[in-house]
Image (cartoon, rainbow, N blue to C red; front, side, top):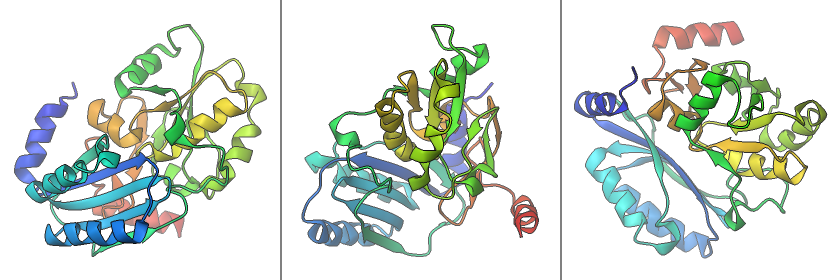
Length: 269
């Protein structure tokens, strides 16, 4: 049985680097000023990673010592705009980032659909535990078949995905709207659960699917990483690609073995 609390304690004891992934859709202004303040705080705490700041919100992949990381999150939440931000956690032996970068962008995740604004109302979501219940049974609570919709790029899917998931074979997220439209008719009587690494792409994909009439659609709360944290490997095959030097995480939130990574690269190349 998957005991997340036991594993968290084991990682805490054996691995010194806390890795977080977090995002929040919230209106932001004065981005250059915010960037300078935030960069100063990260550097003072010796954190490394990447933060994206946009007019529609923030997206972060950071790593550092636990005390310093939690101090940063506590500091960040003193700003009312970020007080509800939540993070997904994993642990590593070494710092997976080489430097600290804060970038200013137009969108957290580009979709080219300006009417899709998660800050104004989130897509319907389902918790990892509830999703496991549905997948165990094969249907939702009303008896409709459940279809998992992978919103990630094709190379990410190659690392691992949910059993029998719909793969759209896209190369970038801006291709998602057209790709899912092509499957609209066949999915009419299904319950759809879109998923991605940490949930951020699904904030937009879930809203888009509802906008085009896919009313029985949900997003997986917290993405694959939260599912790994709360459920483990049930109904999932392989690992999950992450955007740092660990490359991918197994369902126990350990990085994939080096030899497995090399084999995957040789196969791809």
